[in-house]
Image (cartoon, rainbow, N blue to C red; front, side, top):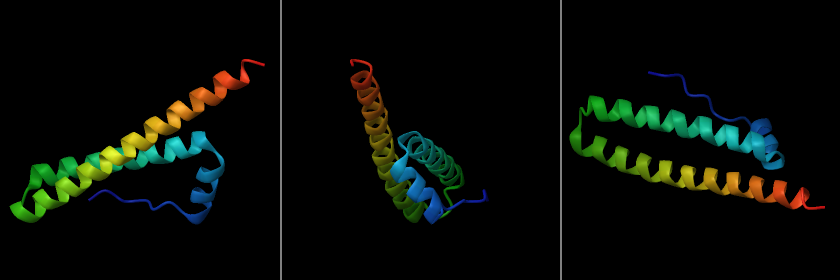
Length: 85
């Protein structure tokens, strides 16, 4: 099983203040989630419980991806606004 690294309070505070770090942290967590979903899918021991976990994980992955898109578009908008001066 892969070692899961939980974001520290310092990481969370840094993510609140730095959109680039927030994007990186969320992207790493999305990658970790997708890897775990793939592992669950290939193991599939307890079918009904595994299916439920995969559905929950897929929903969370979609939410993370949407947040990543929002961060990316916000960063792009702030860069173009600052370049218009």
